[in-house]
Image (cartoon, rainbow, N blue to C red; front, side, top):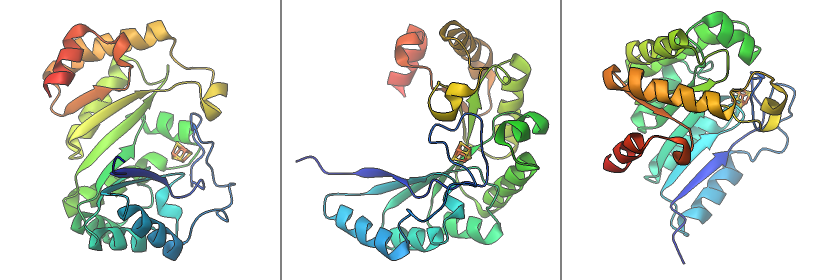
Length: 239
Ligand code: SF4
């Protein structure tokens, strides 16, 4: 039997945002009553360790709305389990950042557009952009490794937005920018401004030719390999 190695832990479906594209349809109106509390989660993680678990990626919903997240992270850290978190970063303060740094948690922060108005409207949360940037600042000050993950639709696929995202990632100390082309799953199926396959391929070509060669941070896109150029596929294999 193969070892378990890693799990993707959907710690809650509750979220303090209600993004247009959310594939698990999370939001503030989703009750937390189905979530495992800390002790139960730690017991499951211990069980998984006997199957070979070595890493956990926390996602949601927004992991930081879970009241026991930090206890669970402490527990995983004490067990030598490698960790990552996908978060909108709006709830990360200096104490949380210091704790994440202590356990070397890799943090992926969602920021979809360098224009705060576009980001806030897409996430249905006032000041979402400013709060995320403050969270990022705490993470950078604490010395955490971070990446920016941007969900790309027709509102954020223009050259100005893409270049702005690269600048934002570089200036905030992130080591990587991931451009996720939104697909029609969950709430995104009702979005209405998704990129067509042809548009997604064009965006990917632009990123490969005009952005990646001079970007001060690593930039990757989520376009399926079958749609990428042979040059990009070779680079992925080489790295
Ligand atoms: S922040 Fe993430 S989990 Fe929350 S609504 Fe947006 S996409 Fe969904």
